[in-house]
Length: 143
Image (tube, rainbow, N blue to C red; front, side):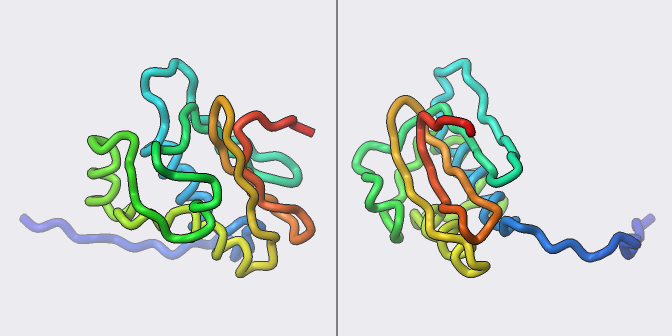
Protein backbone atom coordinates (compact mmCIF):
# COMPACT_ATOMS: atom_id res chain seq x y z
CA UNK A 1 0.00 0.00 0.00
CA UNK A 2 1.53 3.29 -1.04
CA UNK A 3 1.16 6.44 0.98
CA UNK A 4 -0.22 9.59 -0.57
CA UNK A 5 1.40 12.91 0.17
CA UNK A 6 -1.01 15.60 1.23
CA UNK A 7 -0.14 19.22 0.75
CA UNK A 8 -2.12 21.85 2.59
CA UNK A 9 -1.74 25.44 1.59
CA UNK A 10 -1.39 27.92 4.41
CA UNK A 11 -4.06 30.44 5.30
CA UNK A 12 -1.51 32.63 7.05
CA UNK A 13 -0.72 36.06 5.69
CA UNK A 14 2.65 36.43 3.97
CA UNK A 15 5.43 37.35 6.36
CA UNK A 16 8.20 39.82 5.61
CA UNK A 17 11.04 38.91 7.95
CA UNK A 18 13.36 41.66 9.17
CA UNK A 19 16.30 39.23 9.22
CA UNK A 20 16.81 36.81 6.31
CA UNK A 21 15.79 33.31 7.43
CA UNK A 22 18.72 31.80 5.50
CA UNK A 23 21.12 33.99 7.51
CA UNK A 24 19.51 32.89 10.79
CA UNK A 25 19.66 29.25 9.72
CA UNK A 26 23.33 29.59 8.74
CA UNK A 27 24.23 31.21 12.07
CA UNK A 28 22.56 28.38 14.00
CA UNK A 29 24.13 25.66 11.83
CA UNK A 30 27.56 27.26 12.31
CA UNK A 31 26.99 27.40 16.07
CA UNK A 32 26.10 23.69 16.16
CA UNK A 33 28.96 22.61 13.89
CA UNK A 34 31.66 24.71 15.55
CA UNK A 35 30.69 24.78 19.23
CA UNK A 36 32.89 23.44 22.00
CA UNK A 37 31.14 20.27 23.14
CA UNK A 38 33.44 19.96 26.17
CA UNK A 39 31.66 23.02 27.58
CA UNK A 40 28.48 22.70 29.64
CA UNK A 41 27.25 25.98 28.14
CA UNK A 42 24.40 25.94 25.64
CA UNK A 43 24.01 27.45 22.23
CA UNK A 44 21.68 30.37 22.82
CA UNK A 45 19.42 32.02 20.27
CA UNK A 46 18.13 35.32 21.61
CA UNK A 47 15.78 37.66 19.80
CA UNK A 48 15.82 41.25 20.98
CA UNK A 49 13.86 44.25 19.78
CA UNK A 50 16.74 45.38 17.57
CA UNK A 51 18.81 42.26 16.90
CA UNK A 52 19.17 38.48 16.95
CA UNK A 53 22.08 36.89 18.78
CA UNK A 54 23.31 33.32 18.43
CA UNK A 55 25.80 32.50 21.16
CA UNK A 56 28.23 29.68 20.60
CA UNK A 57 30.32 28.24 23.44
CA UNK A 58 33.35 27.86 21.23
CA UNK A 59 36.11 29.61 19.37
CA UNK A 60 37.12 30.16 15.80
CA UNK A 61 38.88 27.12 14.38
CA UNK A 62 42.69 27.28 14.51
CA UNK A 63 44.02 28.99 11.40
CA UNK A 64 40.91 31.16 10.86
CA UNK A 65 41.08 34.86 11.68
CA UNK A 66 38.28 37.35 12.14
CA UNK A 67 39.26 39.02 8.86
CA UNK A 68 38.83 35.75 6.94
CA UNK A 69 35.18 35.51 8.01
CA UNK A 70 34.31 38.29 5.55
CA UNK A 71 35.25 36.16 2.55
CA UNK A 72 35.21 32.54 1.47
CA UNK A 73 37.83 30.74 3.52
CA UNK A 74 39.03 27.22 4.21
CA UNK A 75 36.60 25.05 6.12
CA UNK A 76 37.89 23.68 9.43
CA UNK A 77 34.91 22.09 11.18
CA UNK A 78 35.51 21.89 14.91
CA UNK A 79 33.27 18.82 15.06
CA UNK A 80 33.56 16.82 11.82
CA UNK A 81 31.26 14.07 13.17
CA UNK A 82 28.51 16.71 13.44
CA UNK A 83 29.48 18.83 10.43
CA UNK A 84 29.39 15.87 7.99
CA UNK A 85 25.73 14.93 8.66
CA UNK A 86 24.81 18.64 8.43
CA UNK A 87 26.51 18.67 5.03
CA UNK A 88 24.82 15.46 3.89
CA UNK A 89 21.42 16.82 4.96
CA UNK A 90 22.01 20.00 2.95
CA UNK A 91 22.30 22.38 5.90
CA UNK A 92 26.01 23.11 5.48
CA UNK A 93 28.68 23.23 2.82
CA UNK A 94 32.30 22.24 3.04
CA UNK A 95 33.53 25.46 1.52
CA UNK A 96 33.89 27.94 4.38
CA UNK A 97 31.15 30.15 2.89
CA UNK A 98 28.82 30.38 5.91
CA UNK A 99 29.81 33.75 7.35
CA UNK A 100 30.22 35.31 3.90
CA UNK A 101 26.71 34.07 3.02
CA UNK A 102 25.28 35.62 6.21
CA UNK A 103 26.91 38.93 5.29
CA UNK A 104 25.59 38.86 1.71
CA UNK A 105 22.06 38.01 2.78
CA UNK A 106 21.93 40.79 5.39
CA UNK A 107 23.45 43.41 3.08
CA UNK A 108 21.05 42.39 0.29
CA UNK A 109 18.08 43.57 2.38
CA UNK A 110 19.73 46.79 3.50
CA UNK A 111 21.34 45.77 6.79
CA UNK A 112 24.89 46.94 7.48
CA UNK A 113 27.63 44.33 7.14
CA UNK A 114 28.61 42.45 10.29
CA UNK A 115 31.56 42.91 12.56
CA UNK A 116 33.09 39.93 14.33
CA UNK A 117 35.17 39.60 17.46
CA UNK A 118 36.45 36.72 19.56
CA UNK A 119 37.32 36.34 23.23
CA UNK A 120 35.87 33.64 25.52
CA UNK A 121 33.04 32.58 23.20
CA UNK A 122 31.84 33.39 19.72
CA UNK A 123 28.48 34.63 18.55
CA UNK A 124 27.04 36.52 15.62
CA UNK A 125 24.68 39.38 16.30
CA UNK A 126 22.27 40.19 13.48
CA UNK A 127 20.47 43.54 13.45
CA UNK A 128 16.91 43.68 12.25
CA UNK A 129 16.93 47.33 11.24
CA UNK A 130 18.90 48.85 8.34
CA UNK A 131 20.65 51.35 10.61
CA UNK A 132 21.94 48.62 12.89
CA UNK A 133 25.32 47.00 12.30
CA UNK A 134 25.53 43.22 12.08
CA UNK A 135 27.95 42.30 14.81
CA UNK A 136 29.49 39.14 16.14
CA UNK A 137 31.14 39.43 19.51
CA UNK A 138 32.11 36.88 22.07
CA UNK A 139 31.42 39.04 25.14
CA UNK A 140 28.65 41.42 24.23
CA UNK A 141 27.01 43.91 26.46
CA UNK A 142 23.29 43.41 26.13
CA UNK A 143 21.62 46.79 25.82
